Image 1 (cartoon, rainbow, N blue to C red):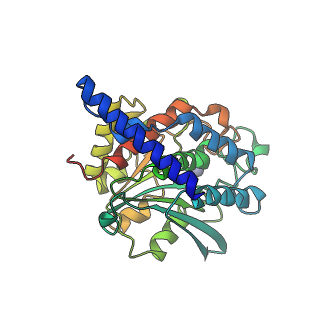
Image 2: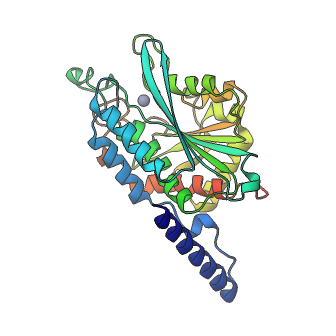
Image 3: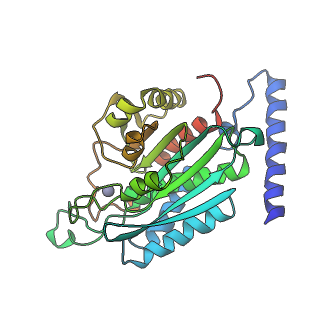
Length: 314
Ligand SMILES: [Zn+2]
C-alpha cells in the first residue's frame, strides 16, 4: 500500500512538473491542480452504481452496513485519519463517518480547515410515489443519498493523489432522511455531529445533496445565502468561470438540509441542492438512469477548484 501511494505521488509530481514546463514554453499560465487532475464524473457515477447495488441504506436493510463498509474501506486507504462516530438518539442508531486529508504543508495542518459533507442514508419510505402501493417501500436513493456520497468519494481520490492547501474533512452523515416520519426531524446525523464535536470549527463547509439528475438545477439556497453569503458567492464565481450551467445565479428556496445545524452553530456552510426537487424525489423513480456523469462532474469540478484554491486571494 505504501509503495502504491509513493508511486502515485511521484507520478503526480512528474505530471505537475511537465505541465509547468510546457506551460512556460507555450506562454500559457500553468494549470491549476484542479485542471491537472480533474474530477471524473464517470468515476463518480460508478460510486452511485455501487451504492445502489447494495439496496436501500435505511435501518433494517443489509445495504446500510454494506455501504458503511464500502465508504470506510475506500477512505481507510486514502485519508490521513478516519473516524466513525456512532450515536443513539430518539430510538435510532446511526454512524457518521469523518475522513481528514491534511494540508499539503504540514505547518498549515492545524490552521484552517474546510468540510465537504453529504448524507449516506436513504429514505425508508417513497411517500411521494404515484402508486399508493409503493409509498410504504424504501427509495433506492441514486440521487437522494448516493449522489452526494459519490461526489465526496471522487474528491477523496483527488485528495489522496494531491493534498489541498488546507486540511479537508469529508463527512458522511447518517439519518438525514427520516424527516416527518413518526414526527422525526431531518438531519439527525448532522445535528448529532455538531453536538458531538463542538470544538470543530471549519472555516467553510459545503453540503452536497441530490446532484446527479440529468436536468440538474442548483439555485442559491436561501438559508446558505442568509448565513454564508460570501462563501456562496465565491462558489458561484467558480461555477461561472467554469461554465457550470447547473449553477443558477438566482435565489432558490429555504431548504432544510444538513447545513442547518452548522449554520445554527454560527459556521459558514453552503448547501448545493437541486431545486425545485426533481419529480423522482422520494419516489421509486429515484434510480440511476436519471443520473448523469456530466451533472456530477460539474458539481465536482467546482468543489475541487474551491478546495485546491484555498488560501488564494478571492
Ligand atoms: Zn430525501
